Amino acid sequence: MISVMRALIARDLQLAARVGGSGALSLVFFLMIVALVPFALGPDLNLLSRIGPAILWLSAVLATLIGLDRLFQADEEDGSLDLMTGAPAPMEMVVLAKVIAHWLTTGLPLALASPLFGLLVALDGTAMGATALTLLVGTPALTFIGAVGAALTASIRRGGLILAVLVLPLMIPTLIFGVSATEAASGGTVPFTTPLLILSGLSLIAAVIGTFAAAAALRWSE
Image (tube, rainbow, N blue to C red; front, top):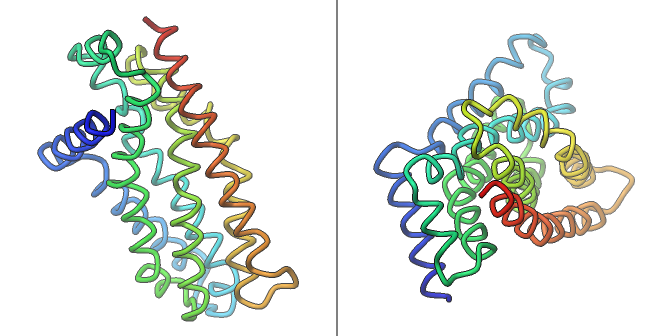
């Protein structure tokens, strides 16, 4: 089963590299939002540094949605999903492999690039490191939550808007604790580890519930 999962992850990574994937688009979208907000708020560096973590996290949430509707839809259109459903490997493992591959091409680059983009919102070194760490811990929750919506809309043409309406409310707790953890690292009243542990718990819960819920939705759509 481990070899099957590795093969599925490698397959999705190769497809993402071959056709461009959503990783580059997510990074560009992330950069666009982070770059445009300072123009809207003006040259107040104190204001930018205060709301910078919220800007980065909100940008990451929106950028995660890029290409998420194609997570299962592409396989649904070319018939690969039918083969995966009828394969001996459980559907939960297929979902887990595809979500991991999507996070490696979308969530991980966002987390790694966040310190660089933090310069645009006047973050100091501590805030940059905290933002990168919270995104690294929290973006898996966003991806697994999005996978449930992607599975529900896999058979719907151009279901990106429906997907966003379904999953954005569920992403709010991750957004709240991600921003709280970053602000705590910059001198907040709450210890940094408290919201970070809650954020880690949200990712673990989303991984379990999201995997089984997405697999059930794919079976139901068949």
